[in-house]
Image (tube, rainbow, N blue to C red; front, side, top):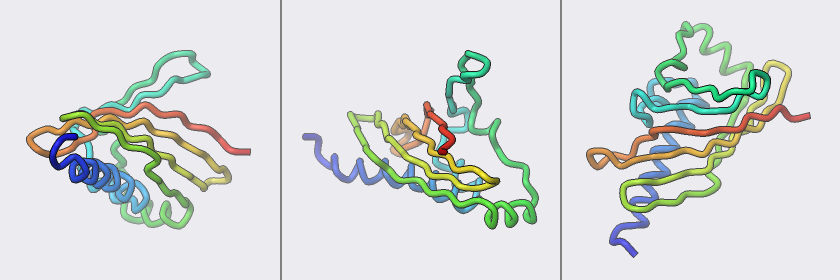
Length: 134
């Protein structure tokens, strides 16, 4: 086993937790800080039957402080790390989100890919599944 492996797993988890805390707290700067600026969010659009990709910066919110506060009151969400795997400078994390708001409940599963760049773990991509719960 690589020396410091447990410590590196904890650093990976902390990076992902910063992303989660930023999303949950509507602190977009904190959430984005876990990502490289051109990191990709990828999903399959079942209606259009094609792959949908956007960068983290393309999903940046331009909400006013009032809209952010309103969102905090209308939306309940949490993210829980389910699994972490790491080899050298690459890692993956399975993250399960629970979202309730705007009259619906969703479960979103993220498979997050990270790289250690300049001794810092950063999210470079995520592939996700987004399901509306009955």
